[in-house]
Image (cartoon, rainbow, N blue to C red; front, side, top):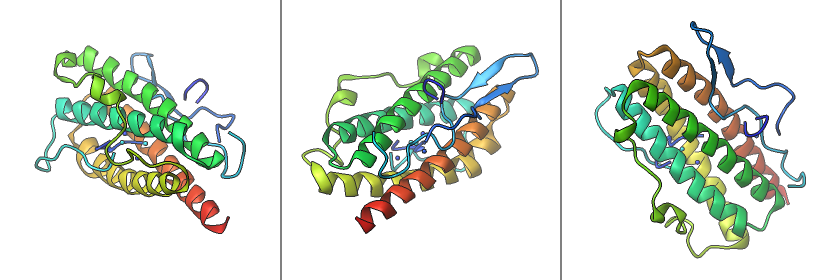
Length: 207
């Protein structure tokens, strides 16, 4: 995204920054909603340098607090995993991807918290903890090419799952117009992330 801009155990949720910023929409009251995510915000594979593979479960019906809780959890996991990959991956393309995912999800987390505050449910959302700064269990101890491969694979799986959850569970549950716009924009951004992850996997496979 311009500054920046849920692979979450959750969305489990969220690409080369283009000249257009697709994340801004003007609401009915004239407010501008910015999800902190944009489509195609990662440099192409080989160029110099989204929430998370499982979401909190439950039945097919989610209220808006559950949606925001899930997104926050996903964003925090994405930040944790991307930060570790950025520091320990061997590929410049993977490092760039991880760096952008971390930035995107930090901005998206901030946006979800702003919506939660407006809806009066901030106190129900998870908060950052010391555990979020530790090495993610899935990637802990891995470095170099092994980390590159597992990080990309996990991110691809997580984004596919998260895209499906937003489409089938979160958007149908959203009644607040700003939350719905945020989810729609996050979905678009995550689809862009998934394309970039897959492109990076293909590029590494050919190298």
